Length: 408
Image 1: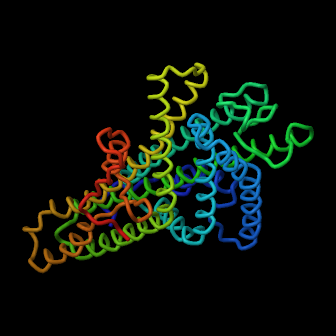
Image 2: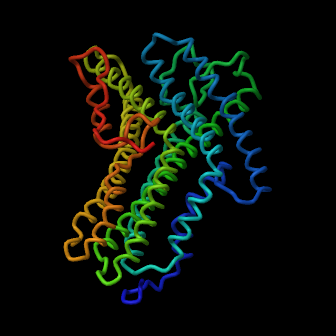
Image 3: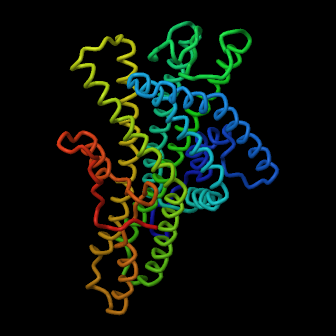
């Protein structure tokens, strides 16, 4: 197949390790990296249970208990929800990834095979370009996570807090989270223990939140690179060996369709939670900004900057999910366009009919979905944003779903 092409002489295994190392290290620290070794699986199961126990009992339950106590105070509720909702989403992500590890093992084996198998220099260039995009997003996500940890955990340890502080929800001594406990946490050593547990919970929750999203991006960009290579191979099909090459490309296309289905089944519940989380916080932040501008409520510059940063981070994070989903749709549609652009009129009628198999497969729309309900595309993102910003209707406008059906 590659006899007349420029075959890449780079080490496929080295490329694969460069591509996957950051994700593997991050998810192994959380205990949710898909492991083949059963002994490691038992250890990671215990590790995940410990992490869940600490996050739920030291942070999640106290923050939601505090939310009940301050219900009706919009400023306190916004301060609470910007922490409690990400904690809840992180718990959901950890549980889902914990349950889906076995399903992802064959997929990761396929990724390793794609990087280590024989390929042309052009195909390797496309794969590396997609991998670099995924790595840049990953590094940026970890940088934002590190800065957020400093602002939320390190600053309060020195008596500086950017939260909205009240006597109802906050003890005499600062805590990273707005929380309420059934016992007095102002005395030592209870205060120090709770502070450390909250700091650990926030660090782990941020790692889960960022790590699972970057892992999803890692998988999607790899599939997009393979779709782009497949499109190039379809356009370069030779007339003298059309049947064999076409058969190979059809098998490759079916494999990639199944890969997209695995990604969608794994991350669909997470994406639904993120969509709801984005909608709630976007609406609350908008209400807060309008209240500040119209009523002139006092707000410190430091807290205003922090709220703006959180708002932009949430907005950008959701936008990136939709951009990645849109990019996947574009690459899938590119396969259909490549089959349509092929010079089928120069081949035998029987061979031209064989092209219909791939054309029918490529015509089927492929999406990432949120809860199997909403396709994660820029159209969905703009619909949610316009619905939340609408002033003419009291109810949220329905999301404009494209006419094409979603996979699954």
